[in-house]
Image (cartoon, rainbow, N blue to C red; front, side, top):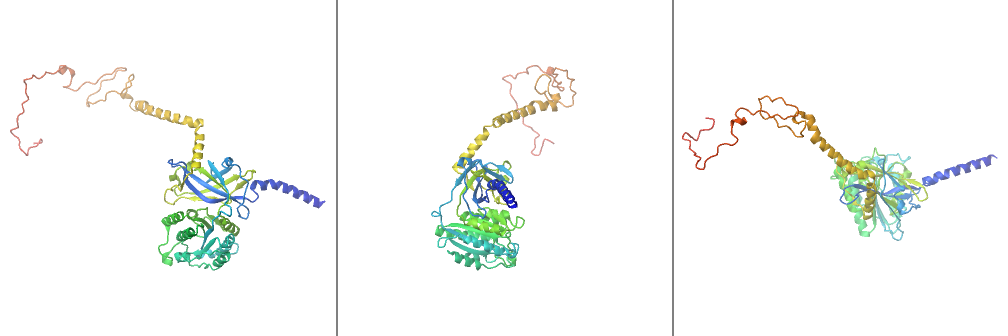
Length: 485
């Protein structure tokens, strides 16, 4: 009897939990596969938009296929938040993963921080360095012997250029694991030349990838911020400050390398803005070994089925000047064709230059511009959009009428007649009392002595043709004489 009751309760609980599992995707979640891209909504307007791309991964971090809705329903089924503000996509498109036959070989470099802080043992009993090596070993499992190539390099503040240039690109997993095991362990005195290491590694990786026509990807793992101290033995001329960060970010963009930054720590201990600027994919911040392993597994994938959406910046960020120095967090939620709702595991970050107005990274495609113009026209057909210009016009007309006709009569009532809408002639003759005004009548002020109208005839004496003007020279003139003497 008890067994039957237990079976009945278990069946009821299973039936109750099944809809909940279906609504949350059964372990499937979103994963941003590209850092948000700032683009110009429509050419010449200067209005900022963002392009986002996300894919779908299972509970173990592997890419998976999901039932996508039709293309026309992609945008309505996507919800995006920018720092907590909702933004409705005006454009969305889905793409499929490349077939294995059309995939290009991979050329990858693992750049691992070997500063003194990597010796902390806060990764479930392991040091950060050991946990990083274990996660990197999982990344190597996805490589194909004889086709893909990988190099592993450590970096600190010393011998940065030589350490990265000396890393060997190997083409088998066994050789790659040997390189990983031979990686020099961190030392307590080591600092972190993050900016220079990323710049040098991206440059070398791009050169190697161009020679073999491979996809170049760089994985950067660090647990700190850019910390360079030449007086303590670090290399000279390493990149520092905001200028160094911008130089490294420009080098990454110029070399065309895919960069995934991985930070071991929290937003309080890491420079999240710098990691976002350096990466082409959203940085991963964690101190969990399982999450770290999933990040390396996801980095194996050259391209997966994903959805690309374009959104307009929120109202309080609708100018590039308002984006200066900002670090934005993008969240996403997507509803599949079967009604399953998926959310992302971690937000996508976008960082503007620290001290400058960001420039547009790309222009909107032709399809994105058409969708943007169409969404704008839909909004302009509302009654309020038609009435607003008229209200603005009449408002300015009323303001001008008030300033021209009403305000002066309030300030100077004595200068305006009661019946005529024109100002009274100002009083030019000081020292004389004005005659008392008569209501409704204009009384001119008397002229000063000698200027009365009766003192002269209406027309003065005319000069005769024979009268000449005679000019006589002054006989008492001297060159030193002035009008004062």
